[in-house]
Length: 113
Length: 112
Image (cartoon, rainbow over all chains, first blue to last red; front, side, top):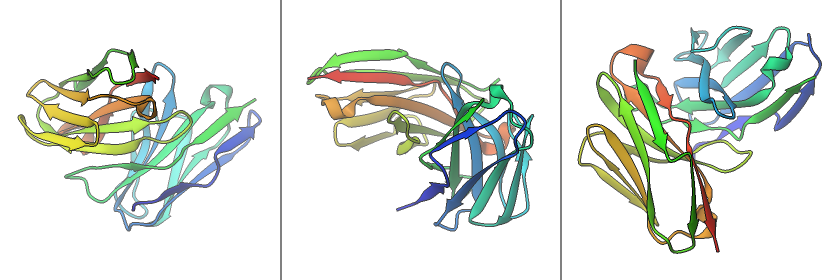
């Protein structure tokens, strides 16, 4: 079974803090993704990566950056957390882009106070 | 613009009462359509993928079908444990680099 592990289920941070969300997959998948999910807005793509050290902006990259130094790990960084970044963050991975079946982690519920 | 619309937003059923969820889509060319199940506070769980009109997939009480404009997720004789939010997503050829475009989901509640 594919396993996507997010380092934290719940996080509480203060405005202005630098926040790291970590994601690890164990199936040698090429692609990794970061989404945020908000009520009424659905899943929105923040950043994605098709290869090590490669990153592409999704639909809402502002205020976020990412890092993929190793194939299995994809990190989301909030440089200076703001209250409007309070959300559920979901990491996903997929084997290939042609049949882009994405497998998700359990999510990180981030609250920025 | 590629778009995915799910209906209804919420559906309440009695145990054993069969029904269908709808996912209509507008894309330049459909590469694949995906169904996910999401329980509260958890990440989406992959259910099915469909690639061409007329294709059907089944898993326990769930059956997904695909036409050129929409997909249905049929739930036969549902049980309370089927309660969840069901998400539909499409992958289009060309634009958006093959990324998935998600609908907002249908929240299903099955009462005993």
